[in-house]
Amino acid sequence: MANQIIFFHGGGSEQDYEVDEKLVASLKSELGPDFLIHYPFLPDNGTPDLGRRKQIEKEISESKDGVILVGHSFGASMLLACLSETNIKKEIGGIFLIATPFWHGEEDWVVPFKLKPDFARRLNEKTPLFFYHCMDDQEVPSTQMKTYQQNLPWASFREIKAGGHQFNDDLTVVANDIKLL
Image (cartoon, rainbow, N blue to C red; front, side, top):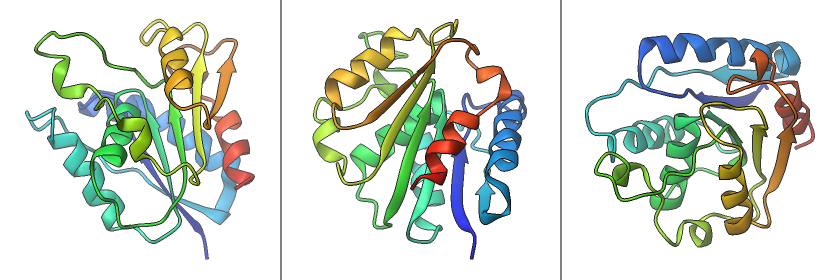
């Protein structure tokens, strides 16, 4: 039986979904037939503070125990918010977060995306948690991964020298970690 992965894309438009399809294709290619990747389109439904979290929670609730969760950019930050704010009843096999923004500031548009102050305590430390960030990412500064390192010292962090925000459409490093689960 294939291992189940859910990949949550960045942004909320069809264009964002299409751009991240290359990341999904790379992951599929590297992982092979032993892994089934579900790649749902999660549109911006106008309620960024709760909408994406509820969409992600629904996708996880419909999966089987042991599901592996992968998120890119905005999708990664909302996945982390969902996992730290809701009572997920499924067993999670691993969490892999790529180019994850750490939302900060008090601007009205930022507040809905921010993690709760106690987010780190609400995550299961027994679930493998990985962060990946290219040092030349022009969209999400690599310094934001440092904030996650300070809050989640038990997680694994991978700094990639180059690849930009889209990792040059190559998720070999992520696939290698998933294979080790």
